[in-house]
Length: 226
Image 1: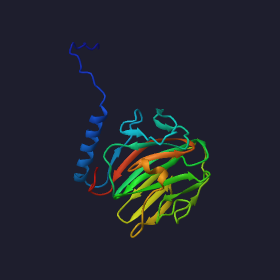
Image 2: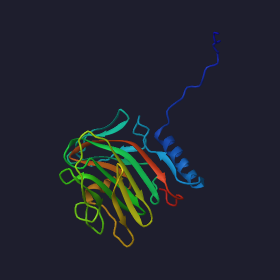
Image 3: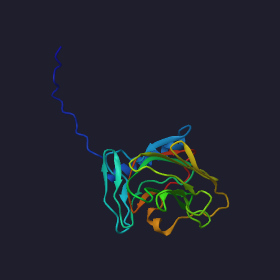
Image 4: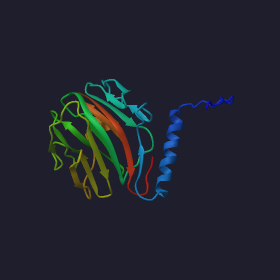
């Protein structure tokens, strides 16, 4: 049976501007507290940078979206992106996939808020294998109790999960927990090199990397949104 064509024109769909996207995301985040249980939202649609901006480190490599991922080319020294939308500062999880494309240093330096203080999860730093938090009580990821040595494969995607609660920071690489630290009465901060990544950003050091499937999950009510 043939279908009759309608003469009614469908309105064209226009992509959201950055401002409209930010307002849409903020509205969604503000509604999350009324939902029961954890709530998750995507921070990257796999097509555009959206609310991610290139971090102006100076000497940064090119940043672009390709094949559903954000690619960060090797810089001199750093290349990175910053989240410019609303920020959740406590009781949340961030998940993403990351891989080293070329180079031999950290391919994922995830800077994130712990209340009003910033911290960074470093994957593959100091020659390519050091992981941990920078900083705890002024000691960086190579010099505190979160230091782990992991041999990373170039070109392989790794699942990264970070959880921040009122008294702990936890992190997983694939299914293995690599960070589990109590933050009560600890000094939380970052190394000065990643200061421009605050409050939420991802960076590489003399290394090309890529990230995809970036998501945020709230664990309790949203008490502090910028």
